[in-house]
Length: 457
Image 1: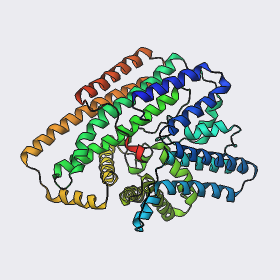
Image 2: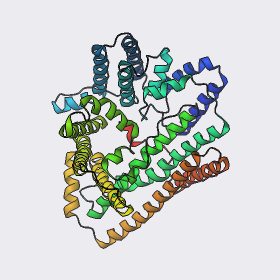
Image 3: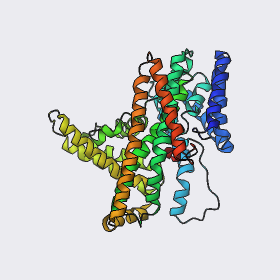
Image 4: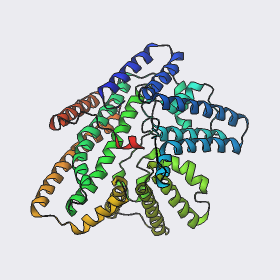
């Protein structure tokens, strides 16, 4: 189900209406049923398989609660990684080995996010930071809750699960704030990300013919496209969950204002970077292995992050690039320096954005062959005057759209933090809705049917 379709809005409203009408004791069951239906209507067999996996995780969690066994934890982690490998990397492995594939394995909805959360749950039970769930429904909602199952956020179990036992006491202001997150997500996706995607996709579709300016333009615009696309989804997820009184993790904090790669990962996909730190970087030894060991662990963590995004060498290069940049940054920052002034901070923000944009090229390029074509065109394909003028006009148009979408988004966030500003939130929501309608008017094909970039992961 496309969460930007009218079907999803109808599904959300019906689920919420029944949720509020039924007794408190039945609400968890209702959320589980709706979440399973959300996944199962599209891929029923895969959903049944994930339900079996959920029961196994539930049993392993109970056993870990009684016996703190590394063997049980290892079994759960191996099972989880094996499941992820089966659905995401087996086809890739077979193609490398030259094995003829007579079938294609279709991955269950949100498998990466479900598996990561289950690893977190089992690990935290083993560490005795949480107790095993007393009700199976709690774990099933944690795994399959429909607003976040597609692309996160990857919720910590100690933060998410306790909310399920708190009676929902949403006021109309709470619903308004949640609604503002949803419409803000639509604005980010439809009015900004999908608009930018038109130019970006056109350039990447013909890399051999693209000139130097076009390639630079597409690379920069993709940086904004993927940010507004993914943060748009996250806002819709946060708003949808808020309707049920559940607070999800804020996944973004103005990442392109970061003053370094390390700072960028404190602002970008925060739930993933937190998961990587807690369940890969720290188990590897973190910063307990000396300065050199810390750098190696950092590099490995981000290389794994790249591989998690997909079975492609370009994703590994993207992750490795981020890991390498952090290692270099740590080398320069080894000596404590005095606090930077505003000008120096501005330079750092610009350098960080350039480095992140270069990394996004690896992320967007389909394969290594296309990467070579990109590099060749960047060096040898010089633009003519007409193309340069056209590109400047496109840049100005894109800049206006991005600036407008960013302004509306920031205004929404600003007023959402102040629940007392009811009329201000309502007014901004109306502006958001107007911008959504305007985007459909300017681009008749933009009817919210395009999928989010991170649905692929």
